[in-house]
Length: 127
Image (tube, rainbow, N blue to C red; front, side):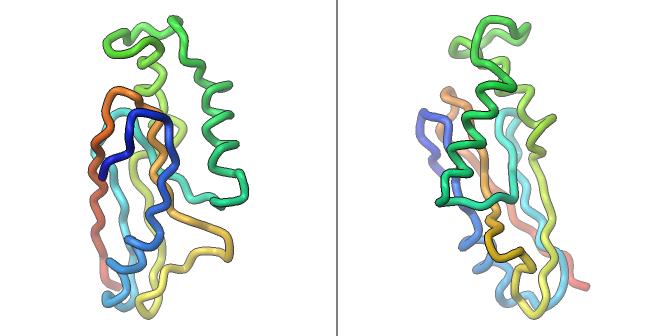
């Protein structure tokens, strides 16, 4: 998936629903194999996605305080992100339907300006 060169929250819910739709009951596992991206289950479209990015900027400022210094200025903070937004999550599935709450969406959170190309891996554990 291409996320561009700007911090972004990408809603993956439709892709996850398509993947799990024929699987029956079990757990959907979502994983991003990147050191500078994470996953979140949040509401989107109401400003929460922008609020999340703004709060990440406050919590993890993009400045020169980071020891990890390769890449664009402040890129070291992107390497701390997975401690706050993990690179994996699991969602229960019943009858091929994700058991998310009314407003919950599965989202890739990518604040990294240096890597606009991302992979998302989906797997399913029946049970």
